[in-house]
Length: 190
Ligand code: NI
Image (cartoon, protein in one colour):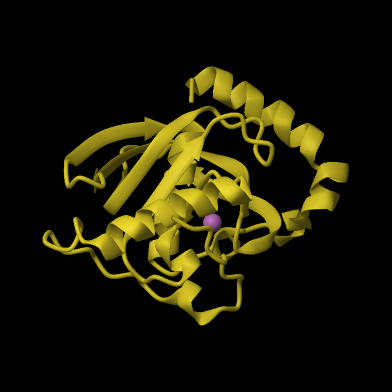
C-alpha cells in the first residue's frame, strides 16, 4: 500500500478514457494493490474520492469515502466505496448546482449535477451493486465517473466566473455556498 502522486490538470492521462477491468483481472495483485493505493492516496489528500487515472492507471475503478472531511465539511458521509466498472444514470431531471473541487485541479467552481442517479458497479470482490444515490453523494459519483471518461469538473463549469482558488473561495464564496448547500442536504437527506 502506498500514497501515489496525483496527476494534475494538463497531464494527458487525465484525458484518456479508462478501460473496463475484466472479470478475471479484478482479483489480480495489480488491481487489488491499485485499489489499496487509491484508498491511501485519497486519505492522504483528504479527498472525497479518486479515480484510477488520477494516479496514472487507465482502468475503470474509483474509490470514495466521506467522513469528517476538512476539505468538504458540508458533505454527508459516504462509507468507503470501491466501484469497479461503474455506471451512472440519471433517474429524473432534477439538478443542483454544486461548487466542486478536485485533487487534480487547483480551483473550485460551480457545476450542475443530477440529484438522483442510479449507480451500478462491482465492488473489489466482484459483487455487483445496483443502487440509487441522491444529493451531494450523487454529485460525487458523477464527478468520479467523469474522471474515467477523461472529463474534469472544469469542463462542466458553465459560469466560469465561479472559478476560484481555494483561498479565494474561502474568502468570498464559502459562506454563501455552505448556507445554500446545507439547506439542500437537509432537504434531500444526503
Ligand atoms: Ni476529481
